[in-house]
Image 1 (tube, rainbow, N blue to C red):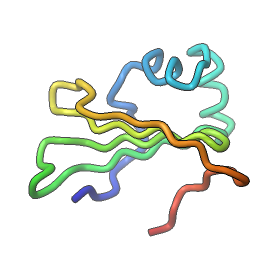
Image 2: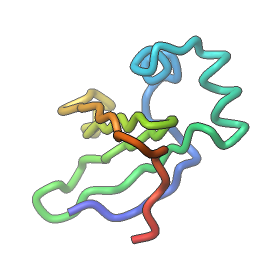
Image 3: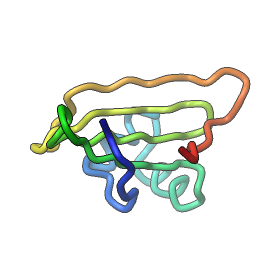
Length: 91
C-alpha cells in the first residue's frame, strides 16, 4: 500500500524523468513550474515498506515508477490516456 506524500522532491535526477517524456531538463522544469507537469510521491507501507511510488502526469501521459531506498527504479511504466488530459486524483 502507498500513501500520499509530498511532491516537493523528485527522488530521482530531473534529467532521468525529463528523458522519459522526451523533454529537455529546462523544458521539464518550465512545464512543472507552470503546473503542466504534476509530480506526486507516495510512501510505501506494509509489504511496500522502504519503497516510494513516483507519479508524473503531463498532458495525456502518466509515468509511474516504484523507487527503492537506494533511489533505483524497481519498476516503471508509462500510460497514455485516450481522449482526455490527466488530472491528479482527489482520492
